[in-house]
Length: 242
Image: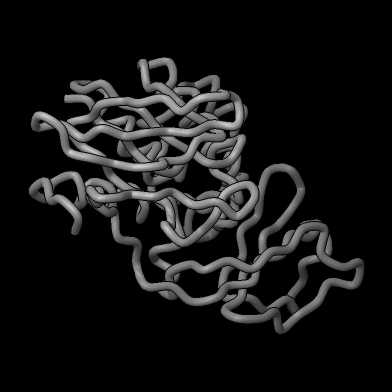
């Protein structure tokens, strides 16, 4: 089958990793880079599961750091290495690209695409189209995908709440530091995550900070949970416009 995944998220990269073994896979992303913005805890629980997706060389670069309840690393590096791996397996990427229309034609799905790097739209045919990104989130210039008249299959994320994430020097973290999630990394930095807003501030301020809509349950704030949700989705019967 020809499978098109909309959105360069970690979920779509994991799905592409599985699909590309037996199918031709393309990923369409509105941004110039996959995985933007990268606002997710860099947390791994099952190290063996994580290792199954990466080479020894990549694991060395990712520099996993042992924590009390798992391992920590930079989340954006995980996405970049996943993207490189699926590209090596033949997955085609269309960045800075959005869907202008989608139609059913002779049992297939015809997507009309527009890109800032092309002067005229292009068309691709697919047997299956899955939307992974938020359809209401616009790309550059606030533009969004337009799926009309055919609506793609949708990967539904978990319900979310607002989380605040801040990165500090690990040396600034002490017993007075309170956060729902603390992830130490090998680069000498520690990620601190709070629901809604931080209840503690470092003396030298946050080196990085962000707010993000993420699942409320800490169990779901991990690489393992993302893999589990993608695998569950792939076992479901194919649905159109769900």
